[in-house]
Length: 493
RNA sequence: GGCCCGUUGGUCAAGCGGUUAAGACACCGCCCUUUCACGGCGGCUUCACGAGUUCGAAUCUCGUACGGGUCACCA
Image (cartoon, rainbow, N blue to C red):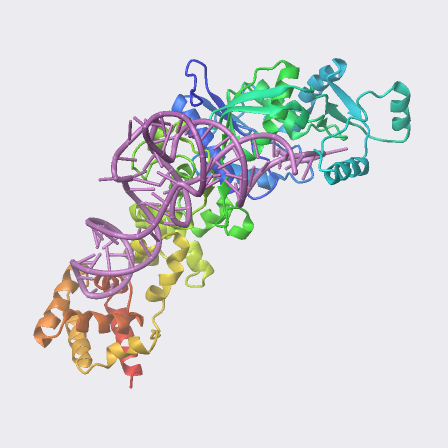
């Protein structure tokens, strides 16, 4: 019942971030759900910037949001940059529009000037809280006489404009994910709709914008649920159609509180920098608070659009599980081309000092081959540095005594000698040729595979574990392999 | 504190009055393998609690507890 989306009318959804800081992963999920709903229904996604907090809004943040959305493949049909017939799409550019409606509200007596100062309001709030009462505005400025008003103005007070909230009313609305919602208007109080500097407050601007932009469905995070009654009374006072709401639950950190910096990486940018792939982030975010009608876990964007539906969106909040993200990302890492992973890995290798930015075409080709060997071991690209020594560091350092012991067996010198001999005899060093010689060594020397593979691995890399040995030998090439082995073996004496 | 939302294993979750309560991640074990990883197989662990409605409740109702959101001239 709550999940009905009327297909007869065009679905117009929006994502309306405020550009006040790094683009949060929760914002990305809201954007994704809106985008999925738009795509699913053949509707439109509008990107609007809510920058009425002039002190905290920055251009950089806006750019960051746009870039992150593009990276995630979330495209918008109307809004900043692309335009549309309901613009402008940045709230600070719409001040004149809001003003018209404010004047009307004022003229109709549905709103009034309030001259109370911050200090007075805070004192009032504290007093009410102390008495365990609802900290709502008590309405001192509700019925000001002309004389009182003149006095305040003479004092130099800059008024805000408050909405005259109807008393003793039930404010009801339907929520796509939560069903019927009902609030007491007395719990809302007269709230500010225009700041003393003339800028509208969020709850007011959002109503006007959503109505004027003909938004049909407002899908947003649950933190806005308690704001919705305020918005509903405004729609009613303004005689504007109320959209359908859908409040999706929050993303929580490990300790079950709203995800914040102390829970680790929270911005889309941080995940991007660590080398998570956008398709993995989309896939993971979609599964946080939404479940498909199947057992499928891996979804392309197209499949997500196909399967998405608001009535499978969960009411309860979800804990952000980095392990699951890693698993999903690892899946996409495996299916990505080695070229792509290499491209993403280079900045990390540069930062860790393994390479400088300028690679010759030949070096790059070799690096791609190495990445192909370790690609399956990575959950995200930044982990490439954990494997970089194996490839870049010819001066082998033996990890620990246990590892060193591998080389101390009496058969080892013979194994190593024979390996070098056979490797040198090879016309071409490649996977297909290396395999047989290792096998031949076990036969000729009558030793187990472990006695062959392990010492070679340790002499080559200093480690007992690592990626496929045969492919590693091919990637490193004959000279480097032999040089490394010689150096390691002679260091033993 | 008022108002509002939520509660199925460690985590994501399916479930819509009758199921042996799916599946995935994580963890553990086994297999595969030169190692690690991948992959395959198996295991672990769940309906917050208490009443009620009903022949029958994870599913419906109420209460309690716990968690969260919100009450700004922030969004």
